[in-house]
Image (cartoon, rainbow, N blue to C red; front, top):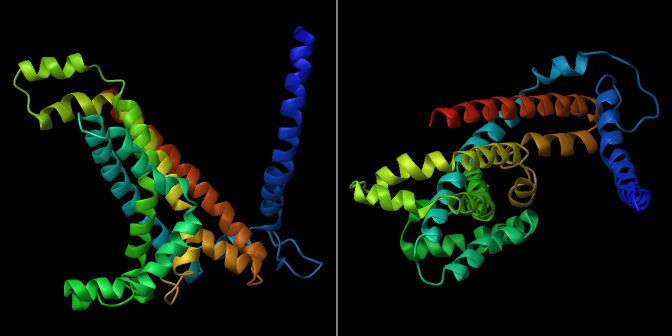
Length: 289
């Protein structure tokens, strides 16, 4: 019986491992290899050039601008998503009518593909936004934000927050379910208001869920690609071009395969370092709450 279970286990694990190695690990290793070459992705030959691509990454203005936009977008979106999702979770966790209905309603955007959501909002901004602003009498905003150098990134933030906060809400709801009602009853007897309850009971007890949400959110938003591709394509004038989009466009169609491979390796290291620092800091903060 044990041998039969072991055989079944191996039959399930080995094919999955081989597929993962073939379609994930192998391309990643090839990308790392090509980052040390001058291959443009087209010609059959290439030469080893060492760390030249990596040094040039920090000299390329397009790369620096993409890093600036990506970090700005990721930080703002992470903060907004967690504030909104925690607020919604607290509201849904209270005694309100039609709680299940609202849970399903708030989770619906997350079911949709980000690419589909972005294309829908692209149509919305192009055809309905100006009419809505005209009806409201806000002449200053009667332009398509996706074509505005200052407003395009805010439109991407809005769409991303609208689609993404549902997942964080579910995690916060799971954390709130672990808190005993006896703690709130005891605090009420001591005369604590809702604000004091939140900072003294709720937030310290859901701190691990806050850590998970913050780390996953920032890591995910640093890899922003779909919404930028569908909404602006990196425009106008490249102000919304993310690192992932830059690597994709210039690497596969801009004859910069090796250079963008080096850029991808650098960015991978950046994301890992940021996630590690963020996790260590937030876990240390949990212990001090």
